[in-house]
Amino acid sequence: MAIEIGHFVEGNHVAGRGGRSGDVTNPATGEVTGKVAFASEAEVDSAVRIAKKAQLAWAATPPLRRQRVMFNLKSLMERRIDDLARLMTLEHGKTLDDAKGEVGRGLEVVEFACGIAHHMRGDFTEQVATDMDSWSIRQPVGVVAGITPFNFPIMIPCWMGAMAVACGNAFILKPSEKDPSAPMLLAELFAEAGLPPGIFQVLNGDKIAVDALLKHPDVPAISFVGSTAIGEYVYHQGTQRNKRVQALCGAKNHMVIMPDADLDQATDALIGAGYGAAGERCMAISVAVAVGDVGDRLIDKLAPRVRALKVGPGLDPQSEMGPLVTRQHRDKVMGYVDHGVKEGAKLLVDGRGLKLQGYENGNFMGGCLFDQVTPAMTIYKDEIFGPVLSVVRSKTFDEAIGLVNDHAYGNGTAIFTRDGDAARAFANNVKIGMVGINVPIPVPVAYHSFGGWKASIFGDHGIYGMEGVRFYTKLKTVTARWPTGIRSGAEFAFKARN
Ligand code: NAD
Image (cartoon, rainbow, N blue to C red; front, side):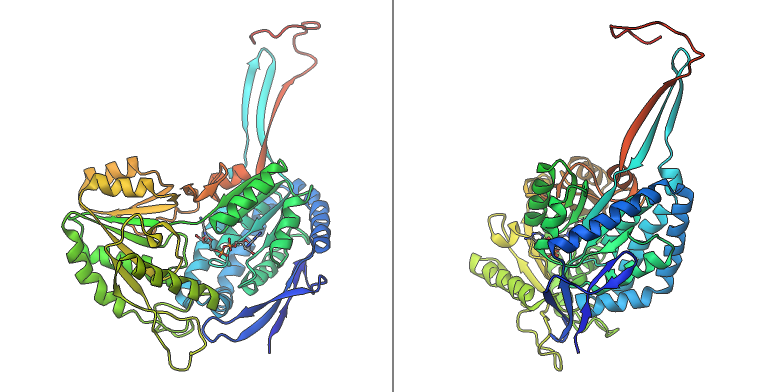
Protein backbone atom coordinates (compact mmCIF):
# COMPACT_ATOMS: atom_id res chain seq x y z
CA MET A 1 0.00 0.00 0.00
CA ALA A 2 1.26 3.47 -0.88
CA ILE A 3 2.21 5.60 2.14
CA GLU A 4 1.10 9.23 2.47
CA ILE A 5 3.99 11.71 2.60
CA GLY A 6 3.01 15.18 3.77
CA HIS A 7 5.25 18.04 4.95
CA PHE A 8 7.38 18.72 8.03
CA VAL A 9 6.21 22.00 9.56
CA GLU A 10 6.97 23.54 12.97
CA GLY A 11 8.56 20.33 14.25
CA ASN A 12 5.80 17.94 13.11
CA HIS A 13 4.72 15.81 10.20
CA VAL A 14 1.58 17.36 8.73
CA ALA A 15 -0.71 16.18 5.97
CA GLY A 16 -0.95 18.18 2.76
CA ARG A 17 -3.94 20.52 2.55
CA GLY A 18 -3.50 21.66 -1.03
CA GLY A 19 -5.30 18.69 -2.62
CA ARG A 20 -2.53 17.94 -5.12
CA SER A 21 -0.06 15.06 -4.88
CA GLY A 22 2.33 12.94 -6.93
CA ASP A 23 3.31 9.28 -7.08
CA VAL A 24 6.55 8.05 -5.57
CA THR A 25 7.78 4.82 -7.13
CA ASN A 26 10.34 2.16 -6.37
CA PRO A 27 12.62 2.35 -9.44
CA ALA A 28 13.63 -1.31 -9.11
CA THR A 29 10.07 -2.64 -9.30
CA GLY A 30 8.05 0.19 -10.81
CA GLU A 31 5.62 -0.13 -7.89
CA VAL A 32 3.95 3.04 -6.56
CA THR A 33 5.06 3.13 -2.92
CA GLY A 34 3.99 6.60 -1.86
CA LYS A 35 1.77 9.59 -2.50
CA VAL A 36 3.61 12.83 -1.83
CA ALA A 37 1.66 15.98 -1.10
CA PHE A 38 2.31 19.03 -3.27
CA ALA A 39 2.32 22.24 -1.23
CA SER A 40 0.02 25.06 -2.28
CA GLU A 41 0.88 28.75 -2.21
CA ALA A 42 -1.08 29.09 1.07
CA GLU A 43 0.89 26.24 2.69
CA VAL A 44 4.15 27.87 1.60
CA ASP A 45 3.04 31.19 3.06
CA SER A 46 2.11 29.59 6.37
CA ALA A 47 5.48 27.77 6.65
CA VAL A 48 7.36 30.98 5.83
CA ARG A 49 5.48 32.87 8.57
CA ILE A 50 6.37 30.16 11.10
CA ALA A 51 10.00 30.23 9.96
CA LYS A 52 10.20 34.01 10.13
CA LYS A 53 8.97 34.09 13.71
CA ALA A 54 11.16 31.20 14.89
CA GLN A 55 14.27 32.61 13.22
CA LEU A 56 14.45 35.67 15.49
CA ALA A 57 15.16 33.63 18.63
CA TRP A 58 17.38 31.18 16.77
CA ALA A 59 19.53 34.01 15.38
CA ALA A 60 19.91 35.33 18.92
CA THR A 61 21.01 31.91 20.19
CA PRO A 62 24.79 31.87 20.78
CA PRO A 63 26.61 30.10 17.93
CA LEU A 64 28.14 27.72 20.48
CA ARG A 65 24.66 26.45 21.29
CA ARG A 66 23.73 26.29 17.64
CA GLN A 67 26.78 24.21 16.89
CA ARG A 68 25.96 21.81 19.74
CA VAL A 69 22.76 20.98 17.85
CA MET A 70 24.98 20.12 14.86
CA PHE A 71 27.03 17.78 17.05
CA ASN A 72 23.79 16.05 18.09
CA LEU A 73 22.67 15.84 14.47
CA LYS A 74 25.98 14.28 13.51
CA SER A 75 25.61 11.45 16.01
CA LEU A 76 21.92 10.92 15.13
CA MET A 77 22.74 10.67 11.43
CA GLU A 78 25.54 8.22 12.18
CA ARG A 79 23.12 6.12 14.25
CA ARG A 80 20.41 6.20 11.57
CA ILE A 81 22.66 5.83 8.52
CA ASP A 82 21.12 2.47 7.53
CA ASP A 83 17.58 3.90 7.67
CA LEU A 84 18.53 6.98 5.66
CA ALA A 85 20.33 4.86 3.06
CA ARG A 86 17.50 2.35 2.72
CA LEU A 87 14.93 5.07 2.11
CA MET A 88 17.14 6.50 -0.63
CA THR A 89 17.66 3.14 -2.29
CA LEU A 90 13.92 2.44 -2.27
CA GLU A 91 12.98 5.72 -3.96
CA HIS A 92 16.11 6.73 -5.90
CA GLY A 93 17.40 3.29 -6.87
CA LYS A 94 21.10 3.72 -6.03
CA THR A 95 22.90 0.85 -4.32
CA LEU A 96 22.85 0.73 -0.52
CA ASP A 97 26.62 1.15 -0.35
CA ASP A 98 26.45 4.26 -2.49
CA ALA A 99 23.55 5.60 -0.43
CA LYS A 100 25.56 5.14 2.79
CA GLY A 101 28.46 6.94 1.12
CA GLU A 102 26.08 9.78 0.32
CA VAL A 103 25.12 10.10 3.99
CA GLY A 104 28.84 10.19 4.78
CA ARG A 105 29.37 13.07 2.35
CA GLY A 106 26.45 14.97 3.88
CA LEU A 107 27.93 14.34 7.34
CA GLU A 108 31.18 16.03 6.28
CA VAL A 109 29.26 19.28 5.92
CA VAL A 110 27.44 18.74 9.24
CA GLU A 111 30.91 18.29 10.80
CA PHE A 112 32.02 21.59 9.25
CA ALA A 113 28.89 23.22 10.69
CA CYS A 114 29.92 21.90 14.14
CA GLY A 115 32.61 24.60 14.01
CA ILE A 116 30.27 27.45 13.08
CA ALA A 117 31.20 29.58 16.11
CA HIS A 118 34.74 29.69 14.73
CA HIS A 119 33.73 30.11 11.09
CA MET A 120 31.40 33.04 11.85
CA ARG A 121 33.70 34.95 14.16
CA GLY A 122 34.25 38.54 13.12
CA ASP A 123 37.21 40.89 12.61
CA PHE A 124 38.16 43.74 14.91
CA THR A 125 40.51 46.64 14.19
CA GLU A 126 41.60 48.93 16.96
CA GLN A 127 42.27 52.59 16.11
CA VAL A 128 40.96 52.87 12.55
CA ALA A 129 41.29 56.56 13.42
CA THR A 130 42.21 58.28 16.65
CA ASP A 131 40.06 56.81 19.44
CA MET A 132 37.95 55.01 16.88
CA ASP A 133 37.55 51.23 16.47
CA SER A 134 35.87 49.13 13.82
CA TRP A 135 34.58 45.58 13.61
CA SER A 136 32.90 43.40 11.05
CA ILE A 137 30.42 40.67 11.84
CA ARG A 138 28.30 38.28 9.81
CA GLN A 139 24.60 38.00 10.61
CA PRO A 140 22.07 35.49 9.26
CA VAL A 141 19.93 36.52 6.29
CA GLY A 142 16.59 35.28 7.72
CA VAL A 143 14.44 32.62 6.04
CA VAL A 144 16.32 30.63 3.41
CA ALA A 145 14.78 28.19 0.93
CA GLY A 146 16.61 25.20 -0.52
CA ILE A 147 15.37 23.50 -3.68
CA THR A 148 17.08 20.18 -4.26
CA PRO A 149 17.38 17.53 -7.02
CA PHE A 150 16.47 13.85 -6.91
CA ASN A 151 19.98 12.49 -7.18
CA PHE A 152 21.31 13.29 -3.69
CA PRO A 153 18.27 13.43 -1.39
CA ILE A 154 20.36 13.58 1.81
CA MET A 155 23.74 15.01 0.88
CA ILE A 156 22.47 18.18 -0.81
CA PRO A 157 19.88 19.04 1.88
CA CYS A 158 22.82 18.72 4.34
CA TRP A 159 25.03 20.97 2.17
CA MET A 160 22.40 23.68 2.40
CA GLY A 161 20.40 22.98 5.55
CA ALA A 162 23.24 22.34 8.00
CA MET A 163 25.09 25.47 6.87
CA ALA A 164 21.99 27.67 6.75
CA VAL A 165 20.70 26.80 10.22
CA ALA A 166 24.14 26.76 11.86
CA CYS A 167 24.53 30.35 10.58
CA GLY A 168 21.32 31.28 12.41
CA ASN A 169 18.75 31.15 9.60
CA ALA A 170 15.48 29.27 9.33
CA PHE A 171 15.59 26.84 6.42
CA ILE A 172 12.74 25.56 4.24
CA LEU A 173 13.63 22.56 2.11
CA LYS A 174 11.71 21.79 -1.08
CA PRO A 175 13.15 18.38 -1.98
CA SER A 176 12.65 16.51 -5.22
CA GLU A 177 9.16 15.06 -5.50
CA LYS A 178 10.74 11.82 -6.79
CA ASP A 179 12.38 10.71 -3.52
CA PRO A 180 11.01 12.72 -0.57
CA SER A 181 11.14 10.10 2.23
CA ALA A 182 14.82 10.40 3.17
CA PRO A 183 14.67 14.22 3.48
CA MET A 184 11.58 13.82 5.71
CA LEU A 185 13.59 11.56 8.03
CA LEU A 186 16.42 14.09 7.96
CA ALA A 187 13.96 16.76 9.16
CA GLU A 188 13.00 14.50 12.09
CA LEU A 189 16.66 14.12 12.99
CA PHE A 190 17.23 17.89 12.92
CA ALA A 191 14.30 18.26 15.33
CA GLU A 192 15.51 15.43 17.57
CA ALA A 193 18.95 17.04 17.64
CA GLY A 194 17.41 20.03 19.43
CA LEU A 195 16.59 22.47 16.65
CA PRO A 196 13.61 24.65 17.67
CA PRO A 197 10.35 24.04 15.73
CA GLY A 198 10.18 26.04 12.49
CA ILE A 199 13.95 26.25 11.88
CA PHE A 200 14.21 23.27 9.53
CA GLN A 201 10.98 22.59 7.66
CA VAL A 202 10.20 20.52 4.61
CA LEU A 203 7.58 21.47 2.05
CA ASN A 204 7.11 18.83 -0.59
CA GLY A 205 5.88 19.84 -3.98
CA ASP A 206 6.51 20.88 -7.52
CA LYS A 207 6.72 24.11 -9.52
CA ILE A 208 3.87 25.70 -7.56
CA ALA A 209 5.79 25.42 -4.27
CA VAL A 210 9.03 26.60 -5.90
CA ASP A 211 7.33 29.61 -7.47
CA ALA A 212 5.65 30.50 -4.18
CA LEU A 213 9.04 30.47 -2.43
CA LEU A 214 10.59 32.53 -5.22
CA LYS A 215 7.83 35.13 -4.97
CA HIS A 216 7.59 35.28 -1.19
CA PRO A 217 8.80 38.64 0.17
CA ASP A 218 9.99 37.04 3.43
CA VAL A 219 12.40 34.61 1.76
CA PRO A 220 15.49 36.69 0.96
CA ALA A 221 17.80 33.86 -0.12
CA ILE A 222 17.41 30.80 -2.32
CA SER A 223 19.80 27.88 -2.78
CA PHE A 224 19.05 25.67 -5.76
CA VAL A 225 20.69 22.51 -7.08
CA GLY A 226 19.29 20.84 -10.19
CA SER A 227 19.24 21.06 -13.96
CA THR A 228 20.53 24.08 -15.85
CA ALA A 229 17.19 25.04 -17.41
CA ILE A 230 15.40 25.16 -14.04
CA GLY A 231 18.42 26.68 -12.28
CA GLU A 232 18.55 29.55 -14.73
CA TYR A 233 14.81 30.12 -14.25
CA VAL A 234 15.16 30.08 -10.45
CA TYR A 235 18.12 32.46 -10.62
CA HIS A 236 16.30 34.95 -12.83
CA GLN A 237 13.03 34.79 -10.89
CA GLY A 238 14.83 35.21 -7.56
CA THR A 239 17.30 37.95 -8.52
CA GLN A 240 14.54 39.87 -10.31
CA ARG A 241 12.97 40.17 -6.87
CA ASN A 242 16.30 41.25 -5.34
CA LYS A 243 16.90 37.95 -3.56
CA ARG A 244 20.33 36.40 -3.33
CA VAL A 245 20.35 33.17 -5.32
CA GLN A 246 22.90 30.44 -5.81
CA ALA A 247 21.94 27.85 -8.44
CA LEU A 248 24.22 24.89 -9.02
CA CYS A 249 23.29 23.14 -12.22
CA GLY A 250 23.97 20.50 -14.86
CA ALA A 251 27.25 19.11 -16.10
CA LYS A 252 29.15 17.23 -18.77
CA ASN A 253 32.37 16.22 -17.08
CA HIS A 254 35.36 15.26 -19.22
CA MET A 255 38.18 13.00 -18.14
CA VAL A 256 41.36 13.44 -20.19
CA ILE A 257 43.50 10.31 -20.48
CA MET A 258 47.08 11.02 -21.50
CA PRO A 259 49.18 8.39 -23.31
CA ASP A 260 51.39 7.94 -20.22
CA ALA A 261 48.46 7.34 -17.82
CA ASP A 262 48.23 4.17 -15.76
CA LEU A 263 45.50 2.62 -17.91
CA ASP A 264 44.27 0.15 -15.29
CA GLN A 265 43.80 3.03 -12.88
CA ALA A 266 42.13 5.17 -15.56
CA THR A 267 39.80 2.31 -16.53
CA ASP A 268 38.75 1.72 -12.91
CA ALA A 269 38.15 5.45 -12.58
CA LEU A 270 36.00 5.61 -15.72
CA ILE A 271 33.93 2.61 -14.70
CA GLY A 272 33.22 4.01 -11.23
CA ALA A 273 32.72 7.63 -12.28
CA GLY A 274 30.81 6.86 -15.47
CA TYR A 275 28.46 4.14 -14.29
CA GLY A 276 28.29 4.54 -10.48
CA ALA A 277 24.77 5.64 -9.44
CA ALA A 278 23.81 4.81 -13.06
CA GLY A 279 25.52 8.02 -14.17
CA GLU A 280 22.99 10.11 -12.23
CA ARG A 281 25.61 12.32 -10.57
CA CYS A 282 26.46 15.91 -11.40
CA MET A 283 30.11 14.95 -11.03
CA ALA A 284 29.80 11.76 -13.12
CA ILE A 285 32.29 11.41 -15.95
CA SER A 286 30.35 11.27 -19.21
CA VAL A 287 33.15 12.03 -21.71
CA ALA A 288 36.53 10.28 -21.89
CA VAL A 289 39.01 12.25 -24.00
CA ALA A 290 41.67 9.83 -25.24
CA VAL A 291 44.83 11.74 -26.19
CA GLY A 292 47.33 10.62 -28.85
CA ASP A 293 47.50 6.86 -29.36
CA VAL A 294 45.87 5.85 -26.07
CA GLY A 295 42.34 5.45 -27.51
CA ASP A 296 42.48 1.86 -28.79
CA ARG A 297 44.29 0.58 -25.70
CA LEU A 298 41.77 2.30 -23.47
CA ILE A 299 38.78 0.91 -25.36
CA ASP A 300 40.23 -2.63 -25.16
CA LYS A 301 40.25 -2.37 -21.39
CA LEU A 302 37.01 -0.42 -21.01
CA ALA A 303 34.53 -2.28 -23.23
CA PRO A 304 34.69 -5.68 -21.44
CA ARG A 305 34.31 -3.94 -18.09
CA VAL A 306 31.17 -2.10 -19.26
CA ARG A 307 29.72 -5.38 -20.58
CA ALA A 308 30.44 -7.05 -17.22
CA LEU A 309 28.73 -4.40 -15.05
CA LYS A 310 26.45 -6.03 -12.51
CA VAL A 311 23.13 -4.26 -12.86
CA GLY A 312 20.43 -5.04 -10.31
CA PRO A 313 18.22 -3.67 -7.54
CA GLY A 314 20.03 -1.37 -5.15
CA LEU A 315 19.15 -3.52 -2.13
CA ASP A 316 21.06 -6.49 -3.61
CA PRO A 317 24.63 -6.28 -2.26
CA GLN A 318 25.92 -7.81 -5.52
CA SER A 319 24.62 -4.89 -7.64
CA GLU A 320 27.17 -2.37 -8.86
CA MET A 321 24.59 -0.24 -10.66
CA GLY A 322 20.89 0.18 -9.87
CA PRO A 323 17.95 1.33 -12.01
CA LEU A 324 17.33 4.86 -13.25
CA VAL A 325 15.08 7.02 -11.14
CA THR A 326 11.91 6.89 -13.27
CA ARG A 327 10.66 5.13 -16.38
CA GLN A 328 10.41 8.49 -18.12
CA HIS A 329 14.04 9.30 -17.36
CA ARG A 330 15.23 5.87 -18.49
CA ASP A 331 13.38 6.29 -21.77
CA LYS A 332 14.96 9.71 -22.24
CA VAL A 333 18.45 8.25 -21.68
CA MET A 334 17.73 5.42 -24.14
CA GLY A 335 16.48 8.03 -26.62
CA TYR A 336 19.90 9.70 -26.42
CA VAL A 337 21.55 6.36 -27.20
CA ASP A 338 19.27 5.92 -30.26
CA HIS A 339 20.18 9.43 -31.32
CA GLY A 340 23.92 8.84 -30.90
CA VAL A 341 23.70 5.83 -33.22
CA LYS A 342 21.82 7.94 -35.79
CA GLU A 343 24.42 10.69 -35.52
CA GLY A 344 27.16 8.21 -36.45
CA ALA A 345 28.86 7.52 -33.12
CA LYS A 346 30.08 3.93 -32.74
CA LEU A 347 28.06 2.10 -30.06
CA LEU A 348 30.52 -0.46 -28.69
CA VAL A 349 28.40 -1.60 -25.76
CA ASP A 350 24.62 -1.39 -25.99
CA GLY A 351 22.77 -1.62 -22.68
CA ARG A 352 19.32 -0.84 -24.10
CA GLY A 353 18.10 -4.42 -24.25
CA LEU A 354 18.84 -5.38 -20.65
CA LYS A 355 16.07 -7.41 -18.98
CA LEU A 356 16.21 -8.54 -15.36
CA GLN A 357 14.17 -11.53 -14.37
CA GLY A 358 11.71 -10.63 -11.63
CA TYR A 359 12.27 -6.90 -12.21
CA GLU A 360 10.59 -6.51 -15.60
CA ASN A 361 8.85 -3.31 -14.47
CA GLY A 362 12.01 -1.72 -13.07
CA ASN A 363 13.76 1.18 -14.82
CA PHE A 364 16.89 -0.77 -15.65
CA MET A 365 19.28 -0.40 -18.53
CA GLY A 366 22.81 -1.65 -18.98
CA GLY A 367 25.90 0.49 -19.39
CA CYS A 368 26.45 1.98 -22.86
CA LEU A 369 29.80 2.90 -24.39
CA PHE A 370 30.25 5.07 -27.47
CA ASP A 371 33.47 5.57 -29.42
CA GLN A 372 34.24 8.13 -32.15
CA VAL A 373 31.99 10.77 -30.60
CA THR A 374 32.52 14.29 -31.98
CA PRO A 375 31.75 17.73 -30.48
CA ALA A 376 29.00 18.35 -33.03
CA MET A 377 26.88 15.43 -31.76
CA THR A 378 23.94 15.90 -29.39
CA ILE A 379 25.20 13.08 -27.17
CA TYR A 380 28.36 15.16 -26.68
CA LYS A 381 26.63 18.48 -26.10
CA ASP A 382 23.76 17.47 -23.81
CA GLU A 383 23.86 16.20 -20.26
CA ILE A 384 22.42 12.67 -20.57
CA PHE A 385 22.45 11.84 -16.83
CA GLY A 386 22.55 8.08 -17.37
CA PRO A 387 25.03 5.20 -17.74
CA VAL A 388 26.35 6.35 -21.11
CA LEU A 389 30.04 7.11 -21.62
CA SER A 390 31.33 8.79 -24.78
CA VAL A 391 34.92 8.41 -25.93
CA VAL A 392 36.28 11.31 -27.97
CA ARG A 393 39.63 10.98 -29.70
CA SER A 394 42.00 13.93 -29.47
CA LYS A 395 45.35 14.19 -31.24
CA THR A 396 47.07 16.45 -28.73
CA PHE A 397 46.92 17.68 -25.14
CA ASP A 398 46.09 21.22 -26.34
CA GLU A 399 43.18 19.90 -28.38
CA ALA A 400 41.93 18.04 -25.28
CA ILE A 401 42.04 21.21 -23.14
CA GLY A 402 40.24 23.03 -25.96
CA LEU A 403 37.42 20.47 -25.83
CA VAL A 404 37.01 20.88 -22.08
CA ASN A 405 37.07 24.66 -22.32
CA ASP A 406 34.74 24.98 -25.30
CA HIS A 407 32.01 22.89 -23.69
CA ALA A 408 29.07 24.84 -22.32
CA TYR A 409 29.24 23.14 -18.91
CA GLY A 410 32.01 23.63 -16.38
CA ASN A 411 31.33 21.57 -13.28
CA GLY A 412 34.14 19.03 -12.89
CA THR A 413 36.95 17.51 -14.93
CA ALA A 414 39.94 15.21 -14.45
CA ILE A 415 43.23 14.36 -16.06
CA PHE A 416 44.94 10.99 -15.79
CA THR A 417 48.68 11.22 -16.38
CA ARG A 418 52.08 10.61 -14.81
CA ASP A 419 53.38 13.89 -16.26
CA GLY A 420 53.49 16.65 -13.64
CA ASP A 421 53.88 19.40 -16.25
CA ALA A 422 50.77 18.28 -18.13
CA ALA A 423 48.80 17.97 -14.89
CA ARG A 424 49.85 21.43 -13.77
CA ALA A 425 49.08 23.04 -17.14
CA PHE A 426 45.69 21.30 -17.13
CA ALA A 427 44.76 22.45 -13.62
CA ASN A 428 45.87 26.01 -14.39
CA ASN A 429 44.17 26.39 -17.74
CA VAL A 430 40.85 24.54 -17.64
CA LYS A 431 37.74 26.70 -17.32
CA ILE A 432 36.12 24.35 -14.82
CA GLY A 433 35.22 24.72 -11.14
CA MET A 434 36.53 21.42 -9.77
CA VAL A 435 39.58 19.63 -11.15
CA GLY A 436 40.97 16.18 -10.41
CA ILE A 437 44.52 14.97 -11.08
CA ASN A 438 44.26 11.17 -11.20
CA VAL A 439 41.06 11.65 -9.17
CA PRO A 440 37.94 11.10 -11.31
CA ILE A 441 35.28 12.74 -9.11
CA PRO A 442 36.99 15.68 -7.41
CA VAL A 443 34.17 16.69 -5.05
CA PRO A 444 35.88 19.05 -2.59
CA VAL A 445 35.86 18.28 1.13
CA ALA A 446 33.56 20.40 3.28
CA TYR A 447 36.19 22.99 4.22
CA HIS A 448 36.87 23.70 0.55
CA SER A 449 33.70 24.77 -1.23
CA PHE A 450 31.81 23.13 -4.10
CA GLY A 451 30.86 24.87 -7.33
CA GLY A 452 31.21 24.77 -11.09
CA TRP A 453 31.73 27.42 -13.76
CA LYS A 454 29.91 28.38 -16.97
CA ALA A 455 26.43 26.82 -17.43
CA SER A 456 26.98 24.70 -14.30
CA ILE A 457 26.28 27.61 -11.95
CA PHE A 458 24.31 30.83 -11.71
CA GLY A 459 25.32 33.16 -8.90
CA ASP A 460 28.57 34.09 -7.25
CA HIS A 461 28.91 31.65 -4.40
CA GLY A 462 29.73 27.98 -4.30
CA ILE A 463 28.02 25.83 -1.73
CA TYR A 464 29.15 24.77 1.80
CA GLY A 465 32.46 25.60 3.48
CA MET A 466 33.26 29.31 3.79
CA GLU A 467 31.33 30.01 0.57
CA GLY A 468 28.27 28.69 2.44
CA VAL A 469 28.96 30.96 5.42
CA ARG A 470 29.19 33.95 3.07
CA PHE A 471 26.01 33.03 1.21
CA TYR A 472 23.94 32.46 4.35
CA THR A 473 25.11 35.60 6.18
CA LYS A 474 25.22 39.34 5.62
CA LEU A 475 28.25 41.43 6.42
CA LYS A 476 27.86 44.25 8.91
CA THR A 477 30.66 46.65 9.82
CA VAL A 478 30.50 48.91 12.87
CA THR A 479 32.67 51.99 13.38
CA ALA A 480 32.68 53.32 16.95
CA ARG A 481 33.99 56.15 19.04
CA TRP A 482 33.17 56.81 22.71
CA PRO A 483 32.04 60.25 23.85
CA THR A 484 35.20 60.63 25.93
CA GLY A 485 37.32 60.59 22.74
CA ILE A 486 38.31 63.62 20.63
CA ARG A 487 35.59 66.06 19.60
CA SER A 488 35.98 67.79 16.29
CA GLY A 489 32.68 69.65 16.02
CA ALA A 490 30.37 69.37 13.02
CA GLU A 491 32.18 68.13 9.92
CA PHE A 492 30.67 69.03 6.55
CA ALA A 493 33.39 67.57 4.35
CA PHE A 494 34.93 64.09 4.19
CA LYS A 495 38.50 64.11 5.49
CA ALA A 496 41.29 61.55 5.38
CA ARG A 497 41.21 59.66 8.67
CA ASN A 498 44.05 60.10 11.09
P1 NAD B 1 15.43 19.33 -11.83
O1 NAD B 1 15.99 20.62 -12.30
O2 NAD B 1 14.41 18.65 -12.65
O3 NAD B 1 14.77 19.52 -10.37
C1 NAD B 1 15.43 20.19 -9.34
C2 NAD B 1 14.40 20.81 -8.41
O4 NAD B 1 13.65 21.78 -9.13
C3 NAD B 1 13.39 19.81 -7.85
O5 NAD B 1 13.15 20.10 -6.50
C4 NAD B 1 12.16 20.03 -8.72
O6 NAD B 1 10.96 19.75 -8.03
C5 NAD B 1 12.25 21.50 -9.05
N1 NAD B 1 11.64 21.80 -10.35
C6 NAD B 1 11.53 20.97 -11.42
N2 NAD B 1 10.90 21.59 -12.44
C7 NAD B 1 10.62 22.84 -12.01
C8 NAD B 1 10.00 23.97 -12.63
N3 NAD B 1 9.54 23.93 -13.88
N4 NAD B 1 9.88 25.11 -11.91
C9 NAD B 1 10.35 25.18 -10.65
N5 NAD B 1 10.94 24.14 -10.02
C10 NAD B 1 11.09 22.98 -10.69
O7 NAD B 1 16.68 18.36 -11.55
P2 NAD B 1 16.68 16.82 -11.19
O8 NAD B 1 16.30 16.04 -12.39
O9 NAD B 1 15.97 16.58 -9.92
O10 NAD B 1 18.24 16.61 -10.89
C11 NAD B 1 19.20 16.32 -11.87
C12 NAD B 1 19.94 17.57 -12.28
O11 NAD B 1 20.56 18.19 -11.16
C13 NAD B 1 21.07 17.27 -13.26
O12 NAD B 1 21.08 18.27 -14.26
C14 NAD B 1 22.32 17.37 -12.39
O13 NAD B 1 23.51 17.67 -13.08
C15 NAD B 1 21.93 18.46 -11.46
N6 NAD B 1 22.74 18.43 -10.25
C16 NAD B 1 23.69 19.40 -10.11
C17 NAD B 1 24.50 19.39 -8.99
C18 NAD B 1 25.55 20.43 -8.80
O14 NAD B 1 26.02 20.58 -7.69
N7 NAD B 1 25.94 21.18 -9.82
C19 NAD B 1 24.35 18.40 -8.01
C20 NAD B 1 23.35 17.42 -8.21
C21 NAD B 1 22.55 17.46 -9.33
